[in-house]
Image (cartoon, rainbow, N blue to C red; front, side, top):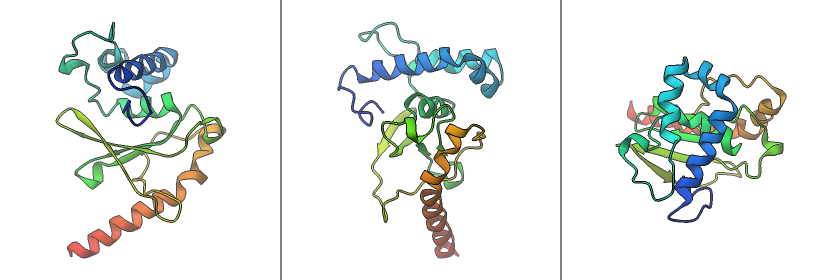
Length: 171
C-alpha cells in the first residue's frame, strides 16, 4: 500500500501505520460504532500501532484485517477496492469523511489480501474509468461523501457488466 501511495521503500509502511493510527484516534467514536464496540476497536486499532520504524513486525501487526479498508479509504480520501478470489466478497470502499473535491487523487487503489499479505493490483482504464466492485454498505450520508457517487457510478457499472458476462460464460 505504501508503494501505491508513493511512499519511500523501507519506511513507507511505517508512515502508513502512523497515518492509520491517527485516523483511528481522530474518529474513535465513529470507528467504535462501526466495528461493534471498544473491544473490536482495540483489536483492529492494535494492528496500526508500531513504536518505531526498526521495530520487528510480527504477524499481529500486519495490516491484514479487512476492517481496515474503510479506515484506509477515509485516511487517504480516495476509493479503495478490496478484491477477493470470491467475487461476492469483493467490495469498494469510499471515503465517508471527505469527498472527491478534497482528494488529491480520485483514482482507486486496488488491493488483494491473501495469506495476510496485501497485494497491489494494477487495473487498466476502460473508456476513462476503472471497474469497481460494489461499494461496501457504509452510508454516504453527508454531502462530501455523496460527491463520490458521480465519480464512481460508471466504474461500478463496468464491474457489474463484466461480472454478468462472466456468469453467462459459466452457464
